Image (tube, rainbow, N blue to C red; front, side, top):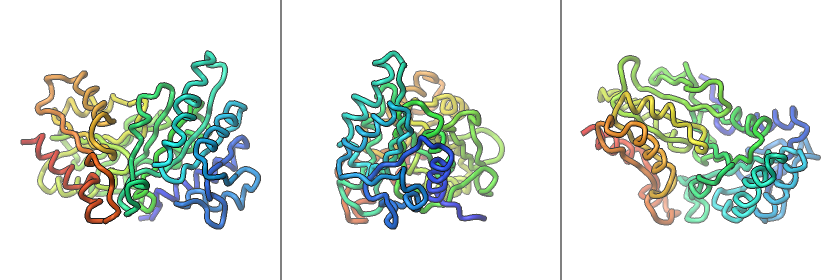
Length: 337
């Protein structure tokens, strides 16, 4: 079985984008070779396309602001924010400019900007380099937020975002997924993997640990937590617990149909997000599912998220704060019994 990693998919997509789209440019800190970016997604790009890959000063607001202007003038800028924690420094340019321009000017302009950034903990980087802050940007009108899982082709999602999507896109890459092998339909004998909406640019993936019948529980999650699912779903299969996982690439706008369809068949739902608990993605998913299904659910919807505190650098303490496999399993047993 081929070892095609999450990182490889993104690297290949970046090369494909610059080769096929002459309007694409890349901006970010320390992205030039031989360093090639903190997580090496841009490795090789500046050597192959020296005129369209630009290293920048350490100013996230300036990087995104310049990219906004480029997008308004017809280019397809791809911004790399070295760590997702630093995206707060560009919040004004994202929320008050990139996301608003098209609506403010009656759609006579577009802002085809993609902002890539690694989120999440698990590598001991401490409180200011380990957060999952995507929920700060959910609910911002006209901003698309994407977080592909290991069951997606993240490179294809990135290609669609840069080349085809006229809206500003925040593209979330979880750090722990970079070295993880992608799992594709037909490849994993222990799991049945399928695509719910094949016609869309950012599909929703379904992962089942059973072949026949209906799910006992529906697990809804995204991005980095997908790395916890293969082992967990296999172990639950051994316990004869049928689980269907719904993994949208899109966090916003929220693709709700697959979630509602499967949740209605199971009647029991667990929603998991990478960030801290409260006022987040899992809350919105739970509300949307409940609005559609209401009393058809057999148990209250369970939510799982990181603890509401800073993320320690110590591996032992970090594991206590972040979402782990045991947290998800306990929530599944909770809705079952």
